[in-house]
Image (tube, rainbow, N blue to C red; front, side, top):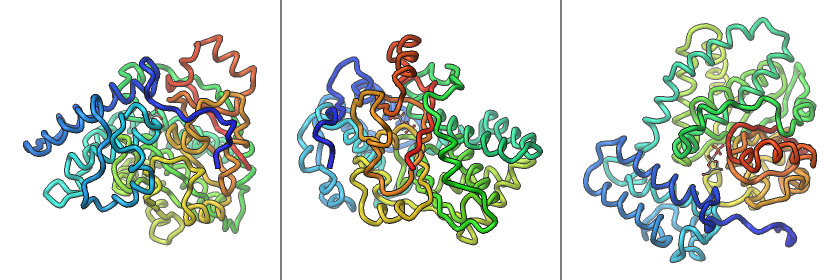
Length: 394
Ligand SMILES: O=P(O)(O)OC[C@@]1(O)O[C@H](CO)[C@@H](O)[C@@H]1O
């Protein structure tokens, strides 16, 4: 149950606010990009026109009567929100539903020839094939000779900063890629994180990694996973991905396959990581999970029982990225000094958030850190994508 004294859930109805900009500008831009990326026929063009009109000026429409997941969405709040403006319902909900409707518009759920065609795949592949990815993989060659703790630190930070590789964010903020990351973290509980994963010759514990973006985020996530398995910090890793394309670049099983193939085909040390991960998939020490709740418009306080039991049994759940952070702590404008342990008390086991800051939600800062950030940047540090954190609740 949400704390009655918690701040209200964030809506998208305030012009000039970050959430309003996502609904009013980012979503139309995504429709435009998807439309331009495929040789769709007139039916899909009309469906995209209708979605554009609905999400900018219209109201939330129910799912088609034959939608395979209609009951699920009704249980997730569709009946309460249908007929209302996209801007007036919880922002977390309207964003999530936007991606669900976009997939409908492009025929992803079929039946028909476009069934199963990921509308974001061209963008994901371009990133995976980029020279930047080559450079990041080549950096592994120098890492092998470094002491193991240094490698662990580098791979953890690689996974953390990989979260900047968020195509939805870059799409609506052209300057995002050029802005330099600020290396000092706004919160750093990494010692707690490592203390939950002691190195052992007979590691049996499971680590759940709730993935975020494909491509240049998923690759460093997988490298971290390989390290945890190879150094006895985890006996098994379960990688939680999305059951269908979501938030432009969120990772699906197909993206895991692409990332593993990219690794195994790379020169040098990267291929060795790729082969180890491939073997871990084969022997079950690395498993992929695509639970419907991964793309639910709800906070993790409302985890379904099966996922709750899985996370409860894990030695640690690593939760990647901005959206997962919003779902973990609740999509509310918390005072930034609200303790992280309080807002994650609902989570069934130890949890670590690895996130670059790309939306207003933030908790767990010291008063000094908040004051220094505000003095330096006003409130831009919340959404600019240049700051990052590692927060842990044991
Ligand atoms: O979860 P990610 O990939 O780190 O970020 C997702 C994001 O770009 O999309 C949302 C706004 O649409 C924000 O939560 C965040 O800015």
